[in-house]
Length: 192
Ligand code: S3P
Image (cartoon, rainbow, N blue to C red; front, side, top):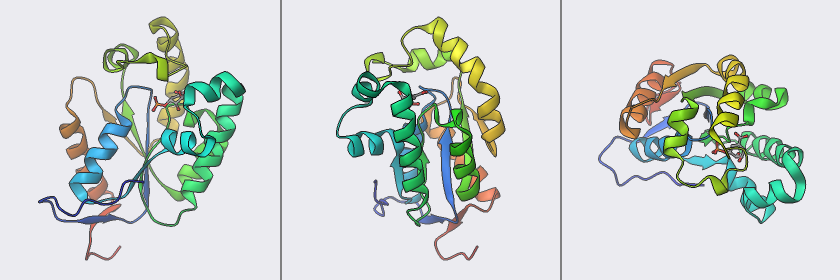
């Protein structure tokens, strides 16, 4: 888990509840989460890394050994553990987290959900190494998968941010403002 970085020039802030970043593979969830964590001095956690640590093997090997169903079970278990940690955090989720009703319910019950929206073509341009993403092997299949998932991303999201053609910094700034407006991101000495 990333610890808050208090050495930056920005004023430290805190989260009133967790913020779940969702969106297709390559949307920039982990990168934006890390940037926002540094900007605001917030704790953050990456679900895929959590799953890999818990399983003791990379995501690609989990898919190889246990199939997608085995990975989905591990993903729900990880989400449940993270949601129960108590401390509100920025949580960057795997792209398929919305495929289970149970996961959507956990996120809705314990935090605010932000959808980083990306097209399959933009995502493909951002993903340099598809070997770590068993479900992003070819562009046609990725386009179809994204189209199928889009309604679930939209239904789960409290807020959607378009990422196409935008820098990580610009997306993180938008998100910061939106979380402040929503009363989820507060100054450290501010009461909820
Ligand atoms: C998946 C997305 C991946 C990872 C796994 C499955 C998906 O995470 O959880 O390969 O089903 O979309 P990223 O969205 O971080 O690439």
